[in-house]
Image (cartoon, rainbow, N blue to C red; front, top):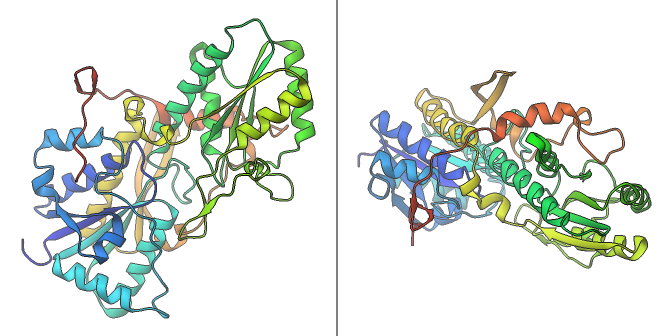
Length: 410
């Protein structure tokens, strides 16, 4: 493969049900432009060790690319590796740019969230400083939906669809017995409540929306929560509460820390693998209200449930990957492909480019107009925003009764 005729692409951070659709979009757009695609194994960290894969060989046909789009996990593997500041450690950058040259990269695309955009921002600035002609472009993904400068992010719609369907089913299950009960469903979301908010979509088409939705954006007062639960239990048998794992008290203490959970901190200084919020609240409610309680953690199922992916999500993920390739070919660098909403009904978006330096390490919270006045639910404004994102069901291939996937790289 000729020098400068390759697109180098990596995936970073947590996987989603749509991250491989973005990869398929990158590969497809590169092929349409007559370029080859080389994948980083385990993100930028793997590339430092020279670990790559020829994607022209591993996903050679349109049928394989389509199957890749419906495959969960990160096909290339992932990492959580923070690039150092080049002013204090230039060695890493020299190694990476040597790798870029060895693999004949004309463009480097990185599919990921806030921290991945930090990587692209640093690489683009360093490349510009040394006069490199390589283009660096970020492709957004995160189930957390917390990237700024884009209406929403690939991965969120599919996770929201799964959460809404699962909360509805859990509510049906909890309502079987003629007794008073409260079920707490713990949903991912370290700093922003977009995922927990999506539980409210369970109320669509006659479903069972949660009675309360607790978000990190609103400090939790336990006594206020207990009072509200007591009122609800007096009215009905079954109460369902959707709660974000990142819910905090007014002083900033994570509720899961009250349960004795100590969160790991990743390379970017973020609390990781939060757990215990639902268990703690279920114990408090049982003790104070004397009713049956249950804690359910959806955990990683939220990001890997490709069998319930949103077709809108997959289509946009692929489109953003393709937009990233075409942006690089047009000479853009230091940018992220993004979505701008044109209208809600009919739903329409435009594919844009934004400055990746502004996106890196910023967090988009659920805005106040989408949160109920009592802080324990979401408004119609949120539902109107989210409904189109979970729309559509992809046509899946099944083998032996289970969905077919591309075999992950060994």
